[in-house]
Length: 302
Image (cartoon, rainbow, N blue to C red):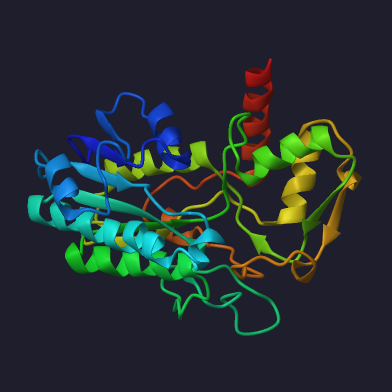
C-alpha cells in the first residue's frame, strides 16, 4: 500500500463522486468545497493540518465550464491554477503525494502527428499555448503544482462521462434527448477519448496504492482514458444503440455548424502507453464502459 490515507478533493464532483463509490477498503477522507476552498491558501493549510508522509491527496476539483471560462478567466484561474499550487505546497511540506487530475485541453495543436495521420498525444509532447482559457489555466495548474512539489503526479484524462439520470455530462444528455427528440445533430469532426468516470476512479485508486513505485517516485505525467476513440457523433449514436434506439436518428454535423465560445480541438486523443508503462492496469474500451454506464442508468430509472 503506497499510502496511509487518501484525501479526495472535489468529492462532490463527477470524478470525486466516482472515487467515493469505488474506494473499496481504503481509508479515504472526502473533501467537498464546503470542507476546503482550494482557491484559498489558508483554507488548504487548515484542511490538511494532519497530512503526513505516506498520505495521498487526489485533486479532482476544477473549473470545467469550458465556454464560461472564456469570460470568467479569474474564477477559472483561481481553481485550476492556484488550487493545485496550494495543494502541492502542503504535500511538498509534509512528504505526502499529490495526484492532480488534468485534461487533454492543455494541448494547443489539434493532433500530435507530423503528417496527414494524427497520432495520440503522449505526456512528453509539447503543449504549446492552449487556445482556451480552460486549457491554459489547467496547464498553469500542472506547472504550478510541479513547481511547488516536484513529486506531483499529473493525470490527464478526457471526455469524462457518467451517464446517470441526474447527471449533465454528454452521455447523460444524449440519453435524455433520445426520449425527447425525434432527431439530433451532433458534431462529427471532433475526435477524442471517451472516459467512464468509474473506470477512471478505479485507475486513480490503483495509482494511489502504487504511487511510490519506481516509475512514479519522482513524479510523472500520465494519460488515463478508456481505450479506443470516437467522435461526439459516434458516442451519441452508441448511446442510442445501448438504449435500443435507432442510431440513424443522430445526424452528423460539423464544428462550423455548431459554433461555441471556446474552440474545440479536432483531435485530442490521449495515448495510454504511459499508464501501462507505470505498471497500471489499462482502462478497457470505451464501448464496454458505455454499456455498463447505460445499464446503471437503466436500473436507476427502474
